[in-house]
Amino acid sequence: MRNKITKYILISFCFSLLLVFLSCKRKGVEEPLPTGPSTTAKILTVTANPNTLLAGNTRDVSIITATLKYYDGTPIPDKKLFFEVRNALRIKVPFGYFAGNKRTISRYTDKNGKVQVKYYGPLVSECNLHETIYIWVYVAEKGEEFIYDYVPIYIIPIHY
Image (cartoon, rainbow, N blue to C red; front, side, top):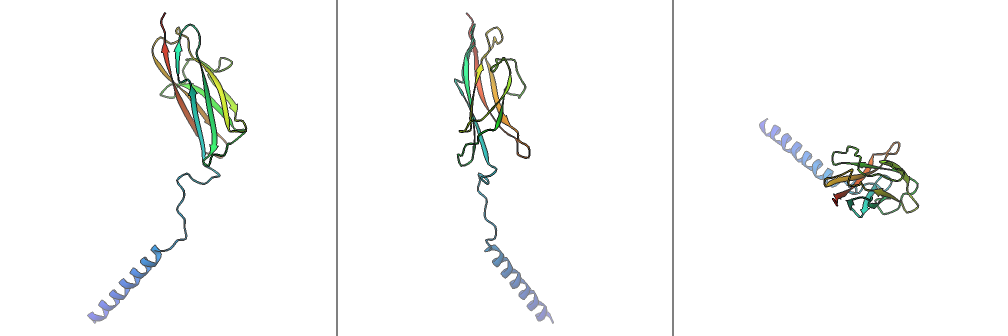
């Protein structure tokens, strides 16, 4: 009787081992790419030129360039991007402005997926210490994830 039980346990073990071995070779599901599917992976990049401004008696200007593309480099035209002036804690700050004396503006991407805006830095009377501000750029579309990026701008006051 004991030999029969041992025999059944051994057969069950071998059968289980065979099932595990066969299931490990199955290739029914492909491993996803780290960049995700091309229909949803979007990349927003933001640059500032120059990224250091002097706060003096006149306003220095930095050109902020935002580019929105799919992961494969295909540009995404006609998408609305929002630009905001914030600090490191993501709080809106009164240092400088965009066209029209605004701290928040929106623009649409061109056929190359790009937008350029001018940021006018603060005067020395508005900023008397070294500051780092951030230009946040984001796009929010119905039914899609929130996409954003930011670029730092260093403000150096000049005391005459």
